[in-house]
Image (cartoon, rainbow, N blue to C red):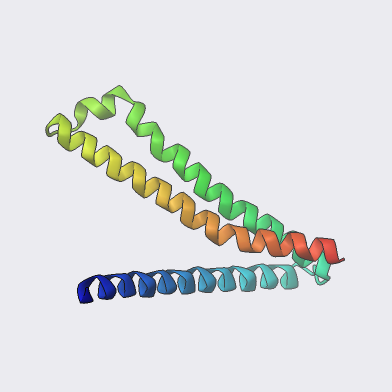
Length: 126
């Protein structure tokens, strides 16, 4: 009973740590967008909301394009032929690579949704 509780508690701590990381990355993104708007002489709230929309779309695009780029190698016959090891090892490695690609897309989506949403909310309020 105690081990399950500790394992569950560890997962909660890990998720909270991950959420803090996402929020810090979003805060840095907001600061970068704010500085770009300031130095570009775009100093109205409407300009900042446009910057947030563009920044969120760029982050989402990076995530989705990385998925497309990550899948291209698995469909190339030369890629499959040149890899060493048994079929089972290749399949396991392909699944691990695909899961890693999907997790990156999910992380980028989580990071990109907040600026995108804030930009839309600011647009609606203006």
